[in-house]
Length: 181
Image (cartoon, rainbow, N blue to C red; front, side, top):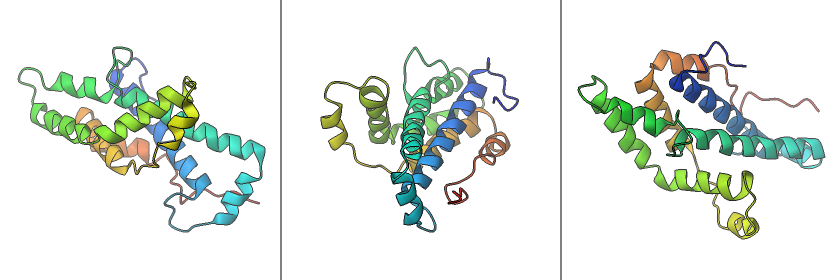
């Protein structure tokens, strides 16, 4: 399901990972009634009482953390992360240099959110550290929208608004999902 993306291109891989992270985030938000336009606690109760749907909800949150970490974790293991790709634009006399610096500054303002996401991924979803229960008690539910905006602005600098929107348009929002009971 690469949707015509060139998976050897770091920017296309970034877009692929980001759209998957957003799809998983929207799915999880729907299943827990988080910031939906019209709350429907009946759906949440239905999901809570179905072992398979509870598992799908967990997988949506897990997938969100795994996919978004590929994008926001500065590491040699992630060649297609947003920081690395934007830093490449800041070299020499690149015409997008100033815009890339602005995007990096915007992403750096999301440092607390980024640390929380990576921490949850590393300590719970990917490795299940021995103290994961203690760790989970201290993780607040954060509003990731400011981080999404910073990432999306960076992606638009790396590609274009049209390319990003064409990919995001394929992701149903939490307000469009429906479970028929």
